[in-house]
Image (tube, rainbow, N blue to C red; front, side, top):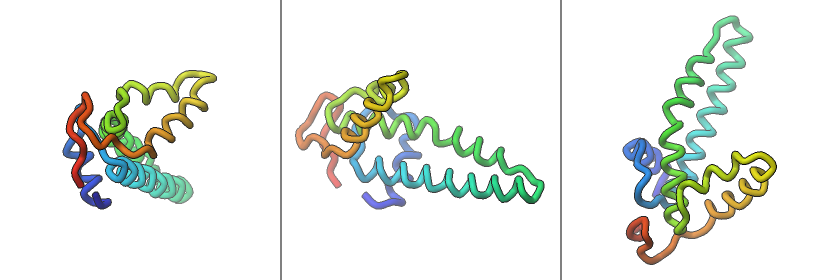
Amino acid sequence: MNFKKSVETCFKKYATFQGRASRSEFWYFYLFSYGTIALLYLLILLSIISGNSALILGIIFILVIFFPTIAVTARRLHDIGRSGWWQLISGIPYVGIIGGIVLLVWYCTEGEKKKNKYGKPIKL
């Protein structure tokens, strides 16, 4: 899946927590999200220096991508046979760092090639 198709798919499946997401869909959407946030952050810094505040753009963008990000992460975990609820492990105090590392490894893991309880394998 290419960059454009990944971003389109994630926004089409805005709040779809069922099914599976490939590694490329997941990572391209995260690249889009963090890249755009970095550009907005730069815009906010430049606008604060010039006297205008563009902070509202950053807030709106974060609100827009909140559900698609959680949904694509849940679908990515489904692809490896894990529940989408596992993404909450990184928010647990003192366990979050280790949980974040475990999640990163899972995000990089190749999806199951057979049908699992979350759906059929992804055909690219």
